[in-house]
Image 1 (tube, rainbow, N blue to C red):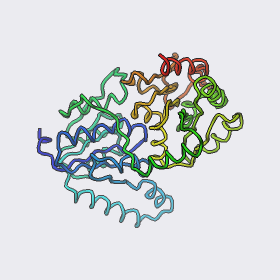
Image 2: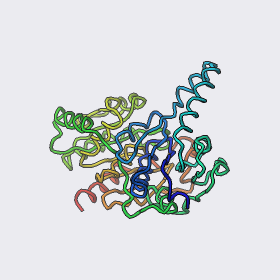
Image 3: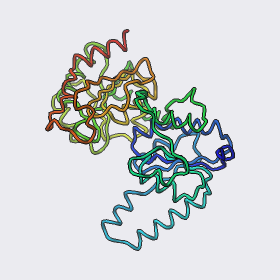
Image 4: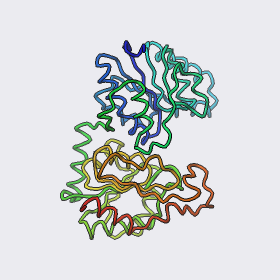
Length: 349
C-alpha cells in the first residue's frame, strides 16, 4: 500500500460532536503508524474545540460552512466563489498523500477529492461519495460496538486497534474551570452529570422525568446533578428547572464544549440521551447510562461501567422518520425506576 509512505494525512469527519468523539481514536492510531507524518483533521466550526488540544494532530482545518451559507443567503456570489477557491488552494498546498473520509457523505467525499490527494480511502456511502474515492471500505454489518465503523476502518488501514480508545483532549484552563465550578457549587464530594438535550425530539427523554431522576440520584446516591447543554438548549433547560427542587445545578449554555467535557471527566456518573456529551462519559471511563430510542448506534459500550437502555420496538430504530405520531414510545417506556436500578448496578454492583 502507498499509505506506508504517507507524509501528510488528512482525516475528514466534519460533524457531529458525538461522531467525532467516536472517530477520535483514528488520530492516535495514525500517529502510532506514521510518527513523523503531518496529520490534519477537517471539521466544521461547531466541533473544532474537540480537536484543537489533541496532541496527535498537527493541524485542525475548519471548513467555514456556516459563513459560506450566510454568503449564499445574502447572494454574495462573488465573495463566496473567491473564498471557496482560496480555501481549496490552501488545502491543496498542503500536498496530502492520503485522505481518510471517515464520514462517508457526499460533502466529505467532495473535500477528499478537492484535496488533490492521490490516495483517498473512505467509508461506503449511500450518497455516492465512493465514486470520489480510490478505495472504499464497507461499514461492518451488525457490529454493535461503539464506534464500530471507525474501528473497522482502522483495521482495514492496517492500524493498531488494540488500544483504540476515544480521546477528548483538554487544556489546563478547561480543567481549572471545571475545578472552580465544582468548588463554587459545593460538589467536591461527587456529582452526576445529566445530558438531556440533542438534535431531534424523538431522541429526547420525557422532560418531567429529569427532575424526578435528579431527586433520586441525590437521595439514594448522594449525588447532585449538573445539567449540561449548549445555547440552543436553554429553553428546554428552563422547562426542566421548573419542576426542580434544588437537586440540579443548571450549567446549560454557560460552558464551552471542552469546559463541559472537563466537568464530565470529573463526575461520578453520567446519564444522557444520544448526544455527543453522553459519549464523552464513556470516553472518560465515567460510569454512564445511555438512553436510546429512535437511534441505536451501539449497544456494546466496550466498558463494564457504561450501559445502554434501549427498548426495541417494531418501528425501532426509526432514526429521522418516526411513525408514532409524536408519541415516542421507545423513549417514554424508559422509566425513572429503570434508570435508577441501572445506576445502582453500576455504582454498587
